[in-house]
Image (cartoon, rainbow, N blue to C red; front, side, top):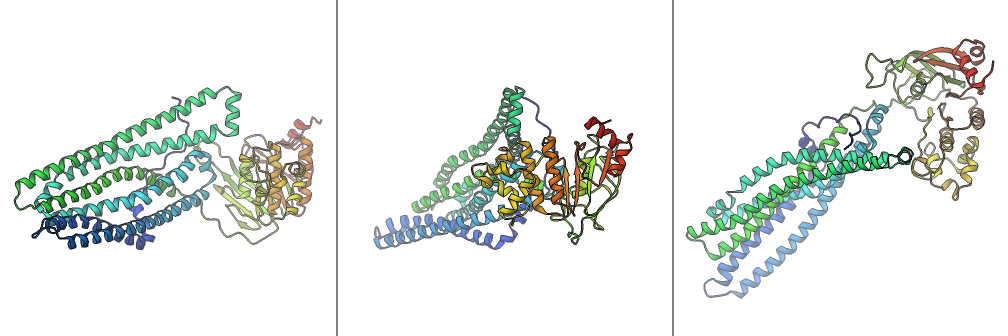
Length: 588
């Protein structure tokens, strides 16, 4: 078996899991009370039928004077009415429990999705996508089943057990004591086994998440391509098989533990009736009708007890799912976005800003430190520097994707540390396209954009002709993560989407890296012409032929080493910018 890939640390189990589960039902307590009443009515009516059986035997069939046909007919009619009522009550409780379950799970699912949306980007860099999908889809599905079926079943079993036991005591306290004498032993075994089931369930959920991660990564277009190029298909299949085998073994162990409880219960159910018969033989005054009614009630007692045993194993399995969901709900998200500053021209300022990525040690060099810049409104700024110099981190700070760990970032005189939709937009090196049409992807930035708006922005980024040549034009699918387009085409679609946002500030973070130099020059010049009068910041490695920028910022090892007008920096032949231009263009 290969080593499991590293993932984010498992959050600690949520404290007081079952108390928190109870709190989930507080908004629906009226419906839960009605559900309890319906279950109690269902159990009471089921327990009434054996009592009618006693009347049938002792009075209607074998009473003084022989069979009483009128009484038999009356009891038969009453039994039919009870049967109809039981069916109606059962239907009502099924509908109500399903409604409550869907509401509870819907609330959990949406709260978790909203919480994850507010998590910092570093969380998604560390956490595996399959783990997130497993908790958001798999765990909530298990909770849905537990709430919809298991919880009503547990209430029905508990109430049914109490009602049946009460009816048995009414018939004969002695026989009832004999029938219930082994029940505590069965419940003890169930409790002990439940703890093991809880641990096995948590392990199983983690393994399912690992399988989901393997599927998401290894069966993506990039993962399949890499495996084929490096000849690792057999290793990938073996790794998946190892995780699947682990899950299978956990399933076998869980099944054995659950069956242990049910087997002990089976012994109880088989042995108890004979103990009752022996007790009836030793006890005087037990009529045939009482014994028959008691025998029927025993079945009604065994059914809810069996239900309780079976459901106890499912509850333990659901506990792991609840803990994993609560673990995500206990994560600390980024603070809520402050109210967006009033619209302004888009002047940016960075004042003694620094940034250190979470998880890096204090001895590690921060990604940025001591950065101070003034980017005037309506200016064009080029950010350059060697790989690892902090260019992308600076772009993320300017876009509000990361709050600085020290210092401030300001737009139009107002400090901010979170994205400002409509004010600042960023286009990244690795654009993300959804599984939908090209038009849907473009309108993500501007839902009200017309088709003319889409065409205009795509003409600027030189991608319109490619889209128009597709069978369905702008209604053609983009594929999984834009897989039906090349890297350069995806970047140009993303650039068109960024233009549609019409933001005061546009940050281009290596957003044209996949384009050939000639196309890149055309696209950049067209974008700058379109955004004349608005602030544009471009981060790039390839800048030797780009001369349409007012200001150049050169970074090295997380610090600003040069900052000023492009021609002034180009005149310093020993400066970093001039040296990098010469290296790219071959100019003397």
